[in-house]
Length: 135
Length: 293
Image (cartoon, rainbow over all chains, first blue to last red):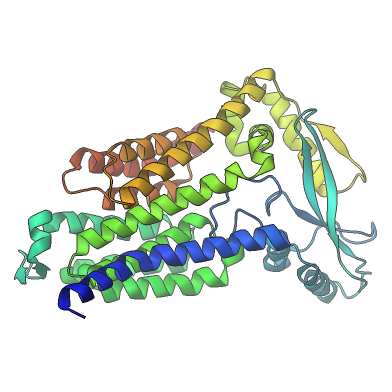
């Protein structure tokens, strides 16, 4: 390999390494959004301001009225995780953490909701997308 | 093939012929400032930015040392990976840019490599953003912007002044949404108050956004492939001016403007002034917007 070949190769690597990394991560995020419902707004895929069903419009509520209505802010990290990545495992993990914080109260089950919007009639409602397993 | 610059550091001769070393300094100092602006209110990220700036001020040649930017990039990754489920995309782009600068500074053709990196990053960011919008059913029907105008308080001024939605209606929308999210009333649903004008505005925003973002993506991609497209800079500035005046996401605007500045050809002086101007205007506009809001 001559010097000029080497420098051209080096230049291409230096110029394209970061853009290639960007593409790989963005495609991975896109795949997860399509397969497991990961929020398009999060994960370096540049899908912000493109979807209504995202981590901002999702929310978690207890399924039993006897439970406290709000999930403690202490659990913000786990709460945010399940809104970004709405999987059974993440919701169950959040439920376990809720149980850990509220040993005296019946934990019941948690449900993850999303906002549904009918643009024809401007009707907004909530629909459940996931429910935690039995504690 | 190097020679000493006025401050004693060495620069490849080929770079000196293309552009003065001052241009590289401006890009690097703007990038330092960008790290601070795009720190996401994180003390950790802000500390990295301030430390990098302080060390570069004390030891001027350090700002051109690729190891400084590599270290800054790695330190950002450590934090960003830990909080990735609440990481805004522009913070990741600022992180990519630190690595791109490290690679550029390690190259004999610093400005050329930095320019290529910045241009590709911008082209890809806008390509993915356009792709997401064009393939989202919620977006192309106009539902996304209809919802956003009526229920996202960052768009309150736009909905009120341009969409003609009375303040009381918007306040009622926000109140009803809080009830819905509270879950106190099972099966609760409500009709968001709107106007025909707001509906037309939502349609306009939908198509304007996807067209301008698509145009930016296309012109930057073409420029990446070596064809001349001076119009790309003005499209980017137009995008920033029409987007961030309405909703000042300062960090994102700053990232786009610094990368826009860095990817300009040496003779694109007016474009650099425009990018720099919008960068600082965004910093000033954000507190004013919050006061008016």
